[in-house]
Length: 171
Image 1 (cartoon, helix red, strand yellow):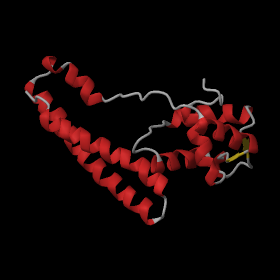
Image 2 (image 1 turned 90 degrees about the vertical axis):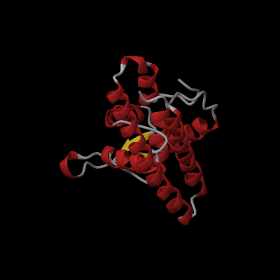
Image 3 (image 1 turned 30 degrees about the horizontal axis):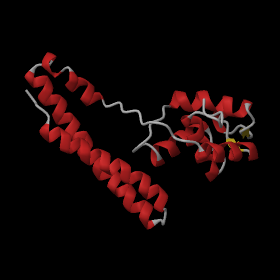
């Protein structure tokens, strides 16, 4: 665990809560909207971290809402912890690309499997690139240069993936 005592998923939740109190579902939606192009979080991770953050006093629970939804609000301790996390060395990237993993075993695929794999990957990255370009445009329009910059990473990633797909041996 980092010096701040929180992992990246917990830190992302603390960061999102700077926008105001949110339920787990709202946090998941905000993470999907803002972070998904370059950082993945699962619903189970979100719901596993929230009670831990509450137990540490980094978030506080609000009044239960409809269908027993539980809003969480950032505490002063949560803000301090998030600030410490921001100041820490982020460490090394972790790359996990399912297409590259399958390519490593390309000799065990049939020709049609490889063609289908790369066709679906090409379609995915083409659509994702278009979507994240739109997010960059909106972030710039809203004057959020930091969000736009982070999203530009996703633009570069999808461009690189598409470039790689053009050169990969496909059956």
